[in-house]
Image: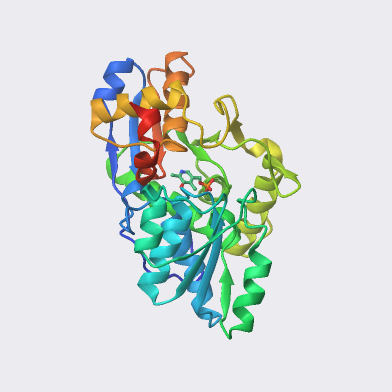
Length: 329
Ligand SMILES: *Cc1c(COP(=O)(O)O)cnc(C)c1O
């Protein structure tokens, strides 16, 4: 077992279930496929950010903060789960959302408002560029704001996915299987870095395959350089020892980015319908639809051995389906 002393606040229901997708595997005539149901973390419709927030919010409380501030796209699942975490812990919440104020209030944006978040529209800048101004204004009002980075992806947030890797490892042993590959949507990096560090600390052979969702860079860094730094920081935070990750430790498949972030194409539409209709599981239009589309395409192209076992990490996001109704059917 990994030992650590990071404070944690309970925000969701863990462990999340692992289930086999037998009908989908049969239909594809491919490897056995399992799914880790982090869409069922239980915090206001769930998702992978619940895990990160358990550690980030604990840090905010330890620092005596009373207000959570974060940023994202209008349909950000991270922002919605942050708003729910704030409500649950009696904190104020400010969300800095890319775009302009809109009357089309749907999906996550509807939930943000039901959860009582204050929304600041930031035009073209959807990655929190305007947060410093908001922090100044809140501080002048006598508030103690705590900034949660884009996607909750700093070492504290990513640490949650080191422990999620351990959670899966224990479930694997219980089920008496070993996953050869774990496939998931990789975007702000906390999931990818955390699972990679977990694999290293637990000395697992599982291949960690991130499907790139968002083109490009984080700040000034290429995404894999950023993943390397984040993993080194996360390793040090969790184990008190230096991490020595290099870019070659990361598998990032960037072949499925279609027309860009948040744009639904045939890949996403077809796979969302396929998985809904064969397994009764809802994927999302931005992340898991694309990542599962990639996995199914790789299976069809025989990139996995028939004897192997693949785990798809379902990171959530289904509330955004409603905002994409016109593109999905
Ligand atoms: C944020 C998010 C991801 C990406 O996770 P990162 O840790 O930011 O890379 C994947 N899927 C969904 C549904 C998300 O909301």
